[in-house]
Amino acid sequence: MSQPWADPRVIRSILADCQTWAVVGLSTNTDRAAYRVARFLQERGKRIVPVHPRAETVHGERGYASLSEIPFPVDCVDVFVRSELAGAIADEAVAIGAKAVWFQLGVVDEDAFHRTTRAGLAMVMDRCPAIEWPRHGPSTD
Image (cartoon, rainbow, N blue to C red; front, side):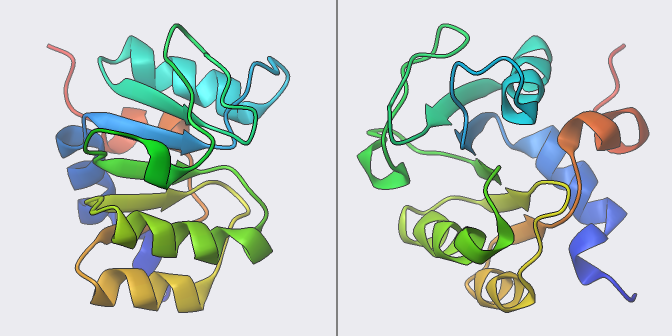
């Protein structure tokens, strides 16, 4: 497989099994993809946790300035930041005991992928859960 970070089995597993999603880069800016994707996940029964320096409440969920400030377990860390910043967030996801990391479209850091998967987390890069859901998400019946 040329892109191990796009494995359909891993995508399917994360979409089905991860219930609490920390969305890094999520703010009240309705023009941003993070805002729409977080709403999409929420509409499918996932709990979203905004992570942004302003720690804003978004979609009715309290925000936190960093992953380490979240006082409960997180299943998946969904990353909406530039590739050069994403690796450090993947490392934080490992540190807080997340089960999975998801880098959004255009976000790629192969070194972070290898570090994260070596630490035992599932990881997807350069994909969007809202796009992958129709193909790999849990059935809605």
